[in-house]
Image (cartoon, rainbow, N blue to C red; front, side, top):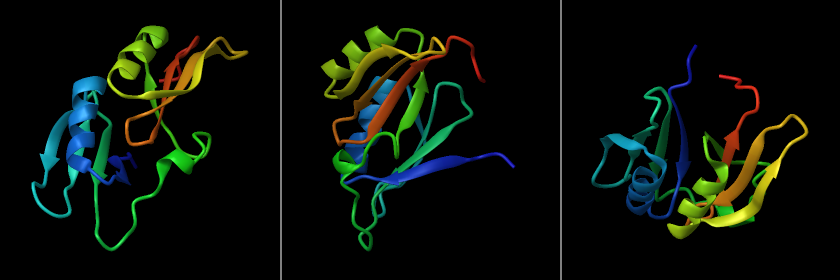
Length: 128
């Protein structure tokens, strides 16, 4: 089996989808312009989708209170330091700044403007 998408609720899915497209390279492949405001976003590889949506019957989690080690969206990145600066300039906040793991991976953890954790990673030895 192959994973089709990962989904998470946001208070303003329209704004989140726009920010992810402008700053993370996603593109919208399907959307609903009315309730439940579902946006399917395809990454630059063309093989991974994220759904951003909102439902009335379920509260939106307070992502700022969820430790990034519990939940985050990780992105392969050629220039971790440069991408930190770019995303911070677009409204993201740095949770854990640039570091190098014992395996030689370059990593950083940010939060998008709505508090969802985004990890940037450049693997010393690619896993995919």
